[in-house]
Amino acid sequence: MAKKITVDRLSDEIMDALEEYKEMTDEVVQTAVDTVSKETKKLVQAGSPVQTGGYQKGWAVKKTSAKAGQVSITVYNRKKPGLTHLLEKGHAKRGGGRVAGQPHIAPAEQYAVSELENKIKRGLS
Image (cartoon, rainbow, N blue to C red; front, side):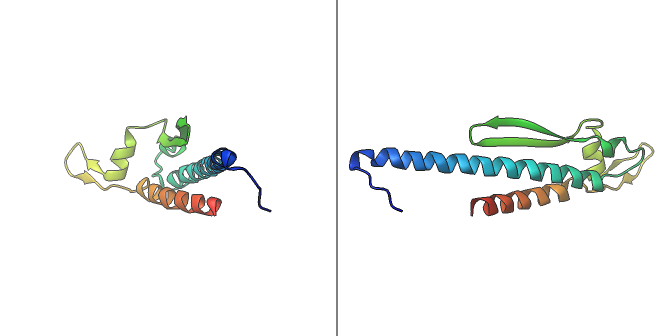
């Protein structure tokens, strides 16, 4: 049902409606980011090379920043952070030659980008 307001209250009502929409979108984005970051961590763990298991078990999710309207979450390897680039891209061997890379981070990143976009669109519609 329509709400009758005076012209004097019009700007206040518009601001209230915009604030309510902002709170709803912030909530949708926060839940989408949380779920997608956990799924991404599981994908990276599943695709990680396993020699002793320490690298694979070392993946973690950390909230980097949470300002008004912004959320940053990082998926990183807390146990062996120096290996991520070497295993993803490959590297030179000590005696000569190269070790082929095993892409396991890039596919999870692509999944996270597309899935986050889809979850936010579904949440706002």
